[in-house]
Length: 87
Image (cartoon, rainbow, N blue to C red; front, side, top):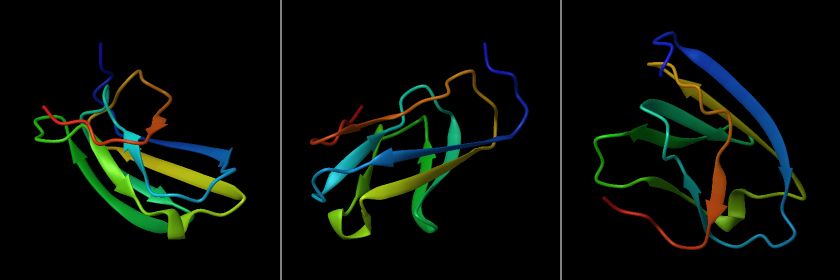
């Protein structure tokens, strides 16, 4: 069950290949995603997409992702995928 309180999540990840990818946001409700300080976009669970596009040009060897979840969630991770996911 969602906590309802806004929260920040922060993590780092390595990118072996700096190619276009997608951040899978399933499990989040109303979130804003930042990659290396760049505002990647806003995710809303109502859709129509479950992923945010991440251009390869934003990636470095070491990357930081920050997620501001405005409605709260128990989910604490995201994954990267090579294809978009739609509702």
